[in-house]
Image (cartoon, rainbow, N blue to C red; front, side, top):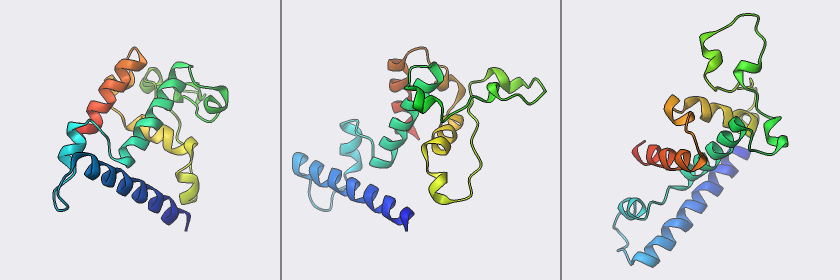
Length: 142
């Protein structure tokens, strides 16, 4: 039930975004809104959520986020496995095992999963501004 509720909220927010764009751009009722979204550099709601989540993960990886968020995510290099792996110098996060859909969508699980799925050069951006610019370009091309 919770999954349906969150999907309904995302859908409703997306519809509101499209209605607002229709009003502002005076598009016909049957015209596609996607070209207008791209022209205005607006992300669809689900990708906007990914954008915000990735920004938080970038800040966590650089130590710029609040401690209560940093405590939720652990770097893979911090976990002592007894062996030195090649992936230890790549900034990836441990994704906790989950048993429920609700826990799967929590910040502690969704954030590291999204961060680990990003290309390496994007994760290694020097500044927050360059990360934002490159990630938004990545989302538009994705």
